[in-house]
Image (cartoon, rainbow, N blue to C red; front, side, top):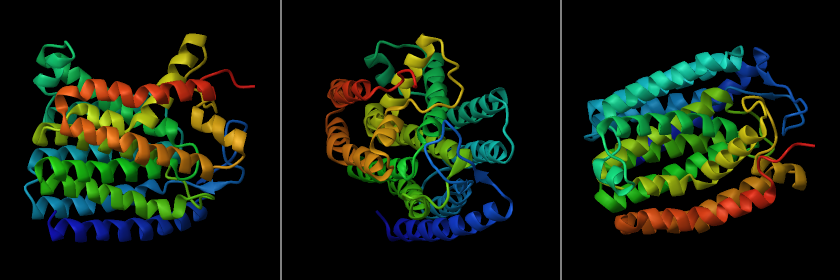
Length: 340
């Protein structure tokens, strides 16, 4: 990886850590507080909106990556425009609650624009899963972007979890991209998003001094997925690699949502029935849960993702082997079961 990418990552970290401190002061001054209620996993009012610092630091660093490497205009536009749309609607939702329809409309528009700029799912991957037709690839890519934008929002419920997951996925994405193709542009973009996430994480570790809010969680979910789509298009990494890296979030969010929908719950309503929330209630602390899930990322999922990157022909079976134990554990913890 070239030196400019590394220095830009350092700059992203510094901008994020300083920007988060500035956002905390702003949120306290404007009374932008996340006040605990019966569905909350925290106990004291906490400033929110710190995700602005993550987005701002990444945007500045990304412009530097584009100037120093061959990132290209289309991925740059997709990440800047789509990311800004997601961050802005999240910021508005943090300031004054927006309807689900407005949020979904913006998420969908950003996803469609990103896929038009970056491209759809590769034909080879589609065929391997028995899918055919460019329009199906387009729809799959759009659905993936919209879903992951919201998955990060669902999973941003305890201190350090969403920012830590972002840091892990982005560091792994940078390493695997560089290992696979030596693409300095994409590896640099991944590294800069990791650095911005770590800068925010310094303020968000338990006990959190600020929350990222919807502006941060939605932005991270969208941007990580868009970077993954661009990496797949440019560098040939199997899609399953990124599904494995995000396995903790995907499994917990999916099982919880499916069980709530099947039971007839109002699934858009706030709740505390995710597996990570169950564990936080059981252990009466956030840090052991965040530590456990990040340990699963590093010691279980990362080796499987590396195996999928080495042998793309076996990526589907590797994905199943990596996620099946997580499915079992998530069900055993009680994800999606009725709250007492």
